[in-house]
Length: 418
Image (tube, rainbow, N blue to C red):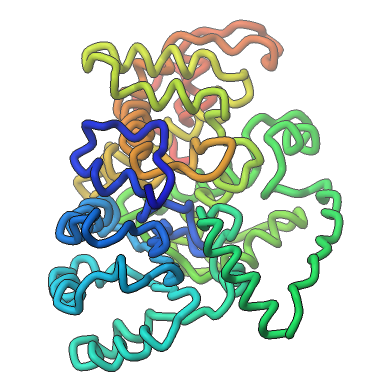
């Protein structure tokens, strides 16, 4: 095989014949909170072993899950040879078949290690490619150039591409590339919010269980974002996101009204979750969650509940707070178009990812299904666990417990806005 077969890839997958090669992969988010999809040419087997029409169908099948959201594609050109190269006719068909719905929300296409072949192709396709689409394409000579644009460590880069990059750098300098010394990481600030554990944030915030950045973004979005169409689907300015993260990490106040963009707090919330050292649903739950698709439909909510009940207390509390909010968002889907299914596509990989590498495309179905069930059946999943140790009163009744998460006052049927 010209790639890695992932253990969670089922032989009954509709595109198993193509998917097993690992040519197309998910790679977390970029610096603007957009989903990243990678395409690795070196994983393409010889043309007689791969049906290119099926490859195109699989690419569209993959993108269909994301075209309603802003997304980014990273194309690793190295490894495209005469043996595995698709025909020019196929390339023209591919471009024509990618209609406006695919092109509109593609916000960036990074072509890594371009060659003369790419330049020739560009000249052939130039009459077909709109100026607007052309501006989305960025050519990067080295892998390190990707760091400016996305979370490099989340990328599933084939070893062949990494070796090729090292050789290119060696040739450029006339010698083997030097070993890069990475400076030791700085200790986090006492006020740090991003990239540190829930426990760290709790210890530095007088035992508060819900991290301040979560509390503030959720509170703001409850007040002003519940009926915004496409909430969580849009990206935001990279620089603005970095600026807001810096303010939070320094313990300074953030007033989202100053930015005049409801998508900024939405991206900040997703970024916070994604930068936790361990996912909110924990590495231990990953394999259990992947198994949700093999559970009989009528028992899936019960299985979700079992998995969630097994979480550490702190993770459970924070997850309940978040899912309660996402349930509220889904209740307004007539206005915001964000159903539980849409939200699951956005949040699935921000709540759980494997301890090594990135989740493969085949893992996406169970991860998103699990997240969708949590949102849709919020009340059923979170209705029975008591929250003892951290409350002075000890065990409390369900209405009181619910009030802590949802902003409900005990006895009331409506949501408060804060």
